[in-house]
Image 1: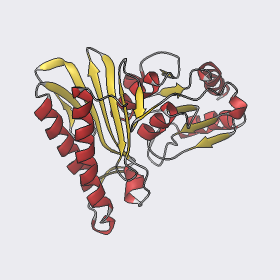
Image 2 (image 1 turned 120 degrees about the vertical axis):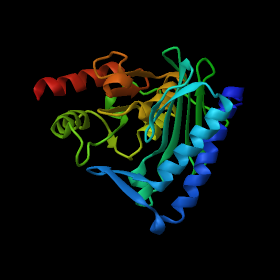
Image 3 (image 1 turned 90 degrees about the vertical axis):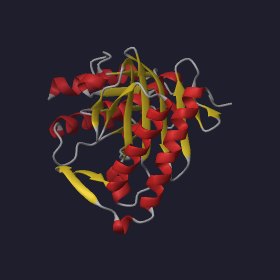
Length: 267
């Protein structure tokens, strides 16, 4: 049975309420208000509305915690030992184009350690949850990472730096190296769901550069609680700081790191 601790009930309840708001806007895309934050970087009314819902719900339940919000920035609270990482709509471009692959992502950090995560796709009603020491779950099903040991059999996911994002030539070198060694490479447009799918055993590995902390926080907990491994691209643990991440089933972590480092050496 899925984890139903008070903390997880708070997080899933907030995610579902935000998801309902997003679904209403998803059904009215022709009327959607869109603002441009940068080159190919957008924020919609749905993002802002969902973030407001999440902040209100989580503040009501835990009034002293701090926030790191995608749209609202850092909000300090009296309790500096707890910090929410909030991405109200991960996969905004998918959402804007009517592609039903996006998610609400909520992660919690306690005393510098990520301890809980929720990733929710409101279109499919897929709820991925994890709390430190309690395992990872997809709705009511316990999750485990895949057992694949050979890169040649693996399916890996990534994020492609789009217009206005740095590292395009770097990515092309990495992708050229990786795609020669694996059975498939996927780019679905939501880092949060990519990480959830690592935890679910659908993907065997995922790498991306220049992510924000709110993109990764919840997913990191999910992957670890499902038995996987997460690091930055130098095998360190500075993902939230440097924005670079490799998540895997553990068996393929070393080989993936070796390929990625090799690609950089050849660049």
